[in-house]
Image (cartoon, rainbow, N blue to C red; front, side, top):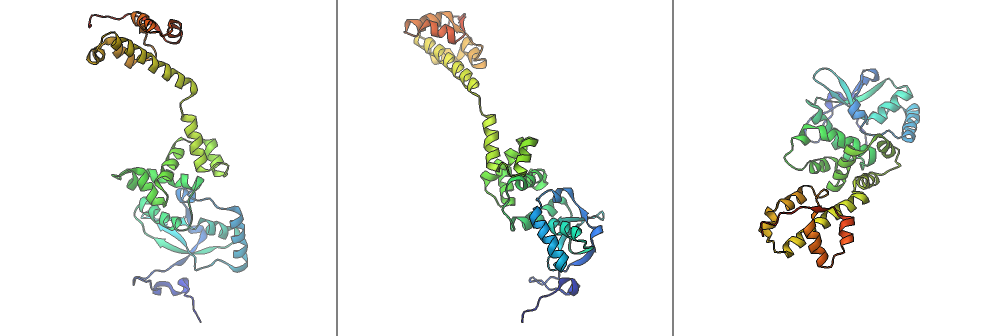
Length: 285
């Protein structure tokens, strides 16, 4: 018959596959500290929580599943993994938990470890993904990376580069209302990205203005070159420089209006649609 090894009872004598010895120990639940960054990483499903609470009231805490604690150099005992079990234990009236202790030196080192646990357990999406992206973006190993930040984040979270890029964009630009919609699963990450992208897209009025400005310069260039200007002369022309620097305010010179009209371009359309009447110095020809 197969036998299970109780890590709590075995203490220091639990062998590991690589020859090391690892063990968990019991810790009073009141001594365990919540860490805001790790607590915020993952949502606790209400239905799952209540089922675990009921199970704990009936059978106690499964000691083969210790929670993970980060023992900091300044004496804190932060809970870094196992918030659902920890929360359920408190609701079930359990006073002590089996804990697995880690002596990580930095937050980055701790967070990378927690990510490794979580990425192997679940597919990150929506609010959980945004929370992880927000923390990753502040981590030194991401900020100091010589590569593309989205690549580092994608690899850390086990997602595609495209998903990482979208998550970074949404995390950076979403307002509180959109974040709440994502948290409530009213919007997927992809839908939020599309919505933000459409909001940032150029409006129809702006497109018209751009089209008119480009068309105006095109008419001017056509008139000048048809009237004998070379490309070199045009690039040196002060009117052309003005047109490129401030296309919306640029006025097509009056003599170019007359020239274009002679080519068959309706004068009324030119004067109505584009600013006209500017003076042009023809001394370069």
